[in-house]
Structure formats: structure tokens, C-alpha cells
Length: 99
Image (cartoon, rainbow, N blue to C red; front, side, top):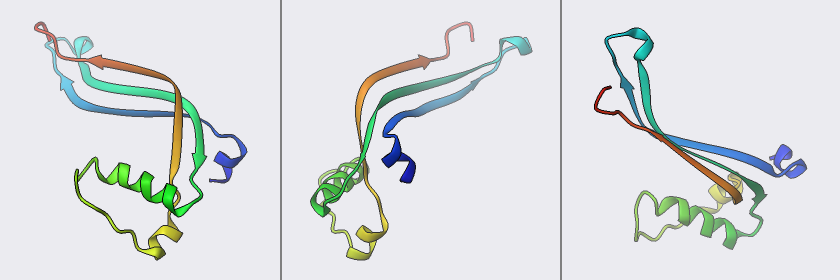
């Protein structure tokens, strides 16, 4: 967190849909994937309300519609970081008919 406070510029990357693409020729092996890169500025959320909102956004990805209650000891132990994206790049490499 010390580094984010000093320089909030960040780059994040997420990927998925991984699959090895085999081929007869070893030089033709490849890898399928989907990826997202983003750059922006990070800010560490300070108030409990901001932190709860951020944690709810994360938790609702797993269990939509559920209401979450966060213990105070957990709230003291966690930092929640908001990233304001200024650029977003997506890439996708999928298997083709010849692969």
C-alpha cells in the first residue's frame, strides 16, 4: 500500500479461457486465451461505507443478490483499492479450424 500511496499509477491484467492448442508440428503449438489490460489510477478507500460498497461489488460477482455483513476485525485487516481506468485493451486468441 505504501507504493500505491507514493505512485498511484497502475496497470492490471486479467486472463482466462486458457487452452493448449496442440499441432503436429511443434512450432505450430499455441495457446488460446482471453485477456484484458487496463491502466489507471488507484486510490485506497478510506471510509467504512466506501470499503463496504467496494467489497459488495466484489462479492456480488460470486453471489448476486445476497446481502453481506463484514466483521469489524475483518474491516480493520483489509484494504480496498478502487482503480479508475483510463485505458482498456482486450485480446482474444481462440482455436481456429486448422488448429
